[in-house]
Image (cartoon, rainbow, N blue to C red; front, side, top):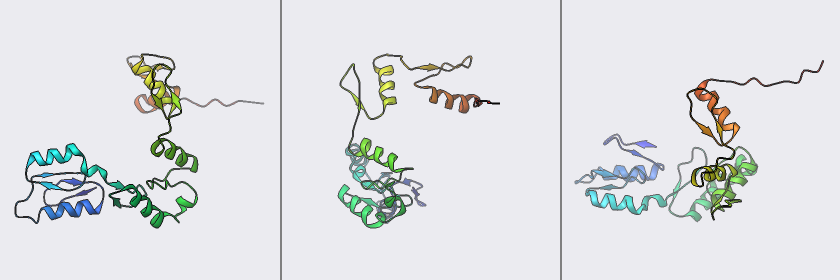
Length: 192
């Protein structure tokens, strides 16, 4: 994210939108309304509001490869950029890089899961009470609890005065560590 030294606005999505924003300061009638996503400036608020409502600036496809600021107007352009610039990288060779968006995952399995859920929109967990489907089982459990008021699997915090609930013991253990400073000692089998 870049900050304009003239007006102080923050511009996301790399160098190109930032340069487009800087050009708006070179006009005689400098715009008062600046889009923080694409850097485009507007002198009339209704035009700015219309731009934000349409979301034209959101069509930018940003490369997710670490330290790469490339933006593309279309998804095929981004895929070509990723293949050309990052296709021979260690991340790509080890199958940890997504070929569609450039995101680098911690493992090939996580990358495959990212592609399935984000790009292919595979939802393997279906709600038995409605037509909704979810990529992750935990999201389905949350959906059941919030939408259908089903409390199976919910765990209440054990600390007096804390009214938080969690959809699994892992989430509650994290809460206990971060919010209450509690660390549970690991048990070891003592064989003597």
